[in-house]
Length: 371
Image 1 (tube, rainbow, N blue to C red):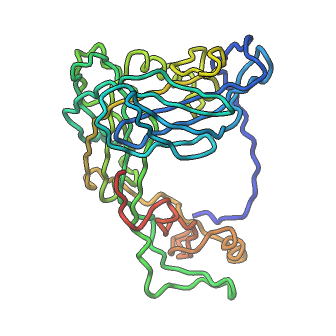
Image 2 (image 1 turned 120 degrees about the vertical axis):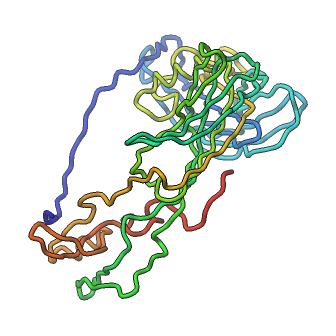
Image 3 (image 1 turned 90 degrees about the vertical axis):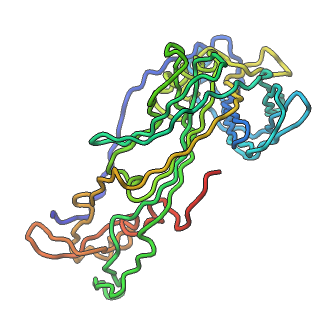
C-alpha cells in the first residue's frame, strides 16, 4: 500500500448548464414567490417556499432566497391545520381527519395572501404487492398496483427507509498525541460497530400507467447496490403511494425534466406554467408552483442480508509516515487496525471516524420508527 503524504490541492470544476429559461419580459422588479407543496392526508406534509428573482428584466430568473411565512391548510368545513417551520421550509404534522371534502393551502407572506385552488383529494391506487428483488449488482424495491376506479392513470410514490448497518472496522489501535505513539487496544469497544439509519425521502417517483390498463407490475421505486450498507443485516422500506390528476402529473414531470441540475423542483426555473396557486390580494401578481393534496395508501416490506455483497473497500485504510502522525490526528484521522503495506510489512492503517464509528457515518444506536 502506498504511503500517504499531506498534500493540499485546490481544484476548480467548471461546467456549462443550459436549462430551459423563462421569458420574464412582463415581470416587475419584485421577486416572485414559488410554492412547492405536497400535502398527504394522514402523513407529514411538506411545503417549500422560495423566490424567483430576475437578474435583469426580460432575462433569466434565479432562486432568490427563502421567505418566512404563515402557512396552513384548511378544509371547506372550516378546520385548519397549521404548519411549523421557518426560512422557506415548513411541514404539517400527520393528523387524522374524517372530512371527505375539499382542501386548500394558504400562505401569508410579505403582506400578501396566497392560496391554492380548492382541491378534492384523489383516492389512492391499490397496492397489490411490494417486494424486494435483486440481480447480480442491484437490489430493487418493486411495487405492483392497480387503479381503484379513479381513472387518473398517474401516480406518485415516495419511499422511507430504515436499516441496520455496521462500520468498516472495529478500532484496535489508538494514538497518544503526547507521546505520538500508536498502541494496541486490549479490549476494543464494539458499541459503535452496529448502527441504525433512517431516511425519509421527499423525492417523488412519477408513475404513468395510463396506457397499461390500470395496472402496474414490479415497478421499481428504489434501487441500491448489493454492496450498499442497506444489505448488512436488516432493511425496512415503506412506500407511500397516491394518485395524481393528469394536470398534476404533467406539471410535476415538466419540472423534473427541467430541473436537471438538481435541487428544488423549481430550480433553476419553474417554466411558464403557473400551476394552481394565486395571490388573493392581486390576481395578476406572479406566483409559481403547484399544491398537491392527496389521499395515500401505504405498504411496508422488510429484508434480511440475503443479497449482501459487502466487502471492505480496498485501501480504505492508509499508511502514514510516523513524522505525520500528529498532523493526521489533528485533521481527524486515527489509527484503526494493522494493514499490510507494499513492502509486505504490518503497519498502522489510518482512517476517519466513520470507518470505525457508525454514529459518525450517520447512524444511531437506537432503532428508529417510521413516522
